[in-house]
Length: 318
Ligand SMILES: Cc1cc2nc3c(=O)[nH]c(=O)nc-3n(C[C@H](O)[C@H](O)[C@H](O)COP(=O)(O)OP(=O)(O)OC[C@H]3O[C@@H](n4cnc5c(N)ncnc54)[C@H](O)[C@@H]3O)c2cc1C
Picture 1 (cartoon, rainbow, N blue to C red):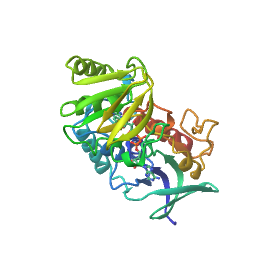
Picture 2: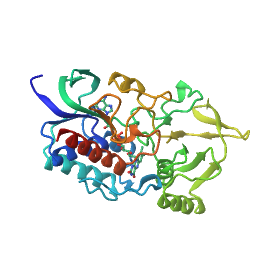
Picture 3: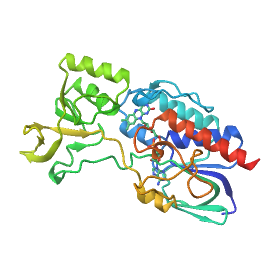
């Protein structure tokens, strides 16, 4: 506890990496990045399919990078390699397999309690993302179907009849990828796709025209049942269909309990309250990355948060 960090960053995704690198470049001396999984970028490793195209302008949002990190379009692999090199080249002190449990402010210092002991810091950035708890449907998923109802592609195998649920970029990318080796339906509650970026919109149109993806648009899903080991999906248009697998690509939820344990004040909707520098109601406690949005974050946006936060801390210190 003698060692007081200038900044502790909770979460080793793009938001946390952005804050770490900007901290080093802009002159904070003692920096600690804490990540609960066994390496940085857990969301990218777990939810992106291998060789996935990674777009800088995700969800159709054109983002100008404001900081010192030159993030460009690439793939899952090139993005992870780039983040590896950033952390190595800037000698970032990162603790992996270390889960933060809570943060308490005592005087001017934050005490961060983790699975690996307590650490003290003058500033804390919470950047834990939303994909720790992917959004789930409101209807019941029968326990007997739990291995066939998924939130990423880990369990898929070739030759399955698969339904993807969602209307964003991830849903379209999952559908196009799986359709090469599976019979794929894309199910979306609205009549048309509007969220995906132009590249994914064009991809979807091509795949649909080639008959590789069957769209089931403008309907809600009423229920899931187990019919002889298959998923029977019942739709609001009084139709139903059997699938081997269902994959929900609906984004993630705000980690309300964790934010409360960090002392972050939430609004009536359970979203964190923060100002234009991403500082929460507690001075010295910031949020970065996807948790600053109900939906619609991106890697580039998360990296920009880091630049803004560290600039603000350094200007305060002058
Ligand atoms: C399928 C899919 C495809 C996508 N494709 C793109 C794309 O092409 N381009 C793009 O810009 N964006 C894309 N995104 C969005 C992008 O991945 C996110 O905007 C970005 O990862 C957000 O970064 P983050 O640091 O806020 O959160 P995350 O990346 O979710 O990182 C949070 C980190 O915090 C860690 N953590 C959580 N709780 C704790 C704890 N208690 N203690 C310690 N560590 C903790 C997690 O393990 C994780 O590593 C995609 C998202 C998905 C789901």
